[in-house]
Length: 344
Ligand code: KG4
Ligand code: ZN
Image (cartoon, rainbow, N blue to C red; front, side, top):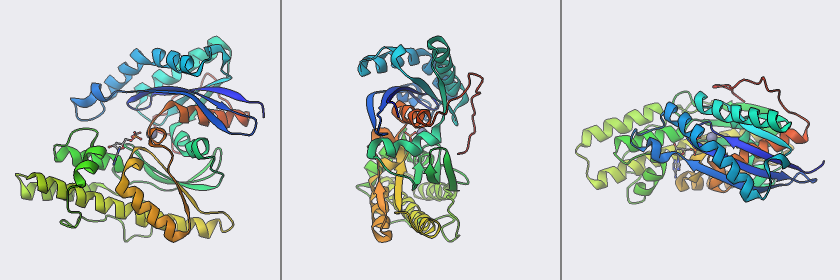
């Protein structure tokens, strides 16, 4: 395998990101640059991501972010071997900005375009950061997704479960909103939960009795809202106790499901070492992290959590997914269209 330098572009949500990644002869990846511009400030006043504003900010900043990624990597644009961009799933306006930019660069430079599935990029990141070998189980928990995916190889994925309503990060954000903790809610809920009593309220564990690997968080969110309304006006201690009790219930839900998913992994792939890779912004949550560590220890499975900056949306994961596909000789035509929905 010849070494390859790949530019990766990510614009599917509220980070404008570009990165340069090198994949060497042995298949190891090195991040040469990874520039992320978060749009938190643009959306803060609205309590969530506004798609139209996101797309406009990507238009404003993407060129500069790409230039900066090349500068920091010490390369000129025409030294890249291919250009990878997220082509979905995500907010369509933003995806169009990144994909169209990538197409223009690919056409102008005469380099291949690689249209990357954002979920695939999350799924393959642990191979860049930790050199994880196939197969492994991935738990993706972000603001837009909550799913278990069996990753057998590049392009070979099997979804084992997903959320039937809200994503886990979305549940954190909604709970934060109703406790007036601001956006994004996950870090705020986790911080305030530290001074709360996780046993004060027993919130429901939706779907947990069912033997499927799916999640449901909207009933839990409603239970939290009803509890908050019943106690209003909330003292600081009430807020902390609700946050802690909510977090305890989601940590338990995620841990139980992960245990079931690992059991399925063992049953279906008896010769493989069970490995669980966590991806997405919620991977930063320490209560969920320690619940997953306990489950993996019990199941004799290895837990891999890439550095959090690479668990959240970034360009390096897109460049790396591009590099993995480029190494297999896979690229896409300029007619590739953006896909707002694109299951793995
Ligand atoms: O992966 P990500 O940066 O963006 C996408 O959604 O694609 O994930 C963001 C989500 C938000 O919902 C945020 O509230 C949640 O991850 N999050 C957390 C924590 N940090 C971020 N949730 C719980 N605990 C955290 N420490
Ligand atoms: Zn993501």
